[in-house]
Image (cartoon, rainbow, N blue to C red):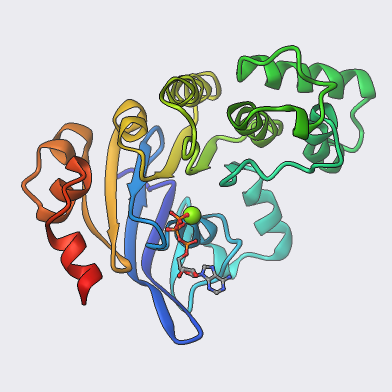
Length: 256
Ligand SMILES: Nc1ncnc2c1ncn2[C@@H]1O[C@H](COP(=O)(O)OP(=O)(O)OP(=O)(O)O)[C@@H](O)[C@H]1O
Ligand SMILES: [Mg+2]
């Protein structure tokens, strides 16, 4: 039996008594391109922070290759985190550093013995992988939204992660830039031979990149399936979300 790369079991998380995650169970396997769908404020970013150990659950646990992250020593957690490349919502670049220094930042921190020439070569390689070979000297303020996201991707792959996490990679971008970023995500997965987990409410993005999907609703993953089965299901919540219908269980829940 194959051990999942990541397992979430019974994850619960509340903030000031307000439940956000209410029992999340999930297995992610090597090679999956998992897309987690959910409405605004559904807890998608909170769920992603649990995956990478940036937030601790109130209840439940996260296993990385079968090992409980809560039982790891801090050096083991540090080592585990290196497998993950996280692209935060909105890019989250350091505004005072140019593109080169943004991407070099994790390299300088984790590869202390690397020469400047080696760092420069790696930064350039990362920029080429996201289709932006000529922006190293620019400041984040000089980039468009789509370019900032791609620089964020480039920074997230600097340490050659094998698990890529994308939090709303295309939200707020026009349809063309959304397609460009979908293609970049697919090509990064292939080039790094990586597993990916993407959180989004953008259906075009979900259709383009997913091999498997899960729907987050009221703190639980209410439906999970391989790509084709997901888009063809009769599950009322999934149907309403996928079709963007004004009436259905999602809107009924809002009225309560
Ligand atoms: N650190 C925190 N402290 C308190 N409340 C938080 C914290 N992080 C998230 N929340 C709350 O948890 C809920 C879910 O937030 P989250 O950011 O995960 O939503 P989301 O699904 O990512 O939404 P969006 O699509 O708008 O990005 C929100 O009500 C938010 O206010
Ligand atoms: Mg979010």
